[in-house]
Amino acid sequence: MSILVYGGNSIVIASLLYAQWRYVTTSHHGRLVDENLDPISKTTLSRRTLLGIIVYLIATGFSFVYTQLSPFPFVLVLIPAFLPNKTIQRITFRRSYEKMR
Image (cartoon, rainbow, N blue to C red; front, side):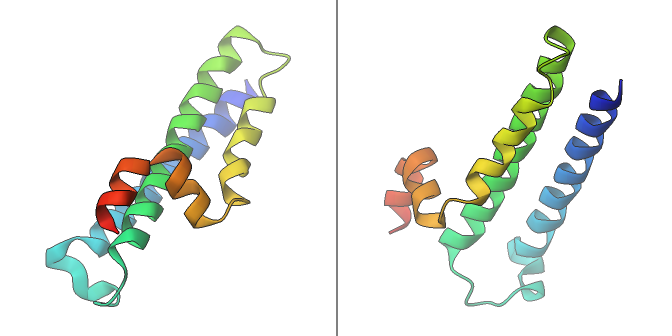
């Protein structure tokens, strides 16, 4: 039960972070961040947050099937945190990264 609370809480917090980031980086609210902020950085941060939400959803669903192993998929969220931005862009979002360059 506790892993479901943790997973649900993580999903809600990551979703709120994503909504907040999208709000401050949209064109009509663009003055909330630096106008010269690189579009690649905006997209990368948005996609990293979405990737976290997806992993949290999968990990929470996994906890229904394998209760003893359920904490381990949550560790997958940490992997992108230790990789440089350029590596994340090349691995997960290659096409849009190449378009933006």
